[in-house]
Length: 108
Image 1 (cartoon, rainbow, N blue to C red):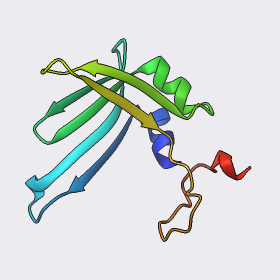
Image 2 (cartoon, one colour):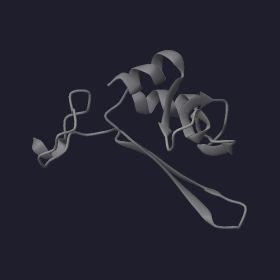
Image 3 (cartoon, one colour):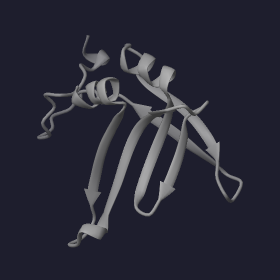
């Protein structure tokens, strides 16, 4: 689980998705341990950051807890649901490489 190890050791997970043929067509996203009080999403110029309270993020990363769930009010007054979950192996046949995923508890 390299992402979980990165969060524990470096305090962040970094990733990106390219949506076009140019570098600027990418969306970058990260999960970062921070001095925030509650989980919060920050969006700035093709960058989406999920800031987690350091203590909560470290406890989650070092446990069998599946996810972190929160919500935050956004500009139009609606609630944005925040969900961060560990990636489990699929129960069905898939061609995706699942070697770095957590064992699925439903297979026990």
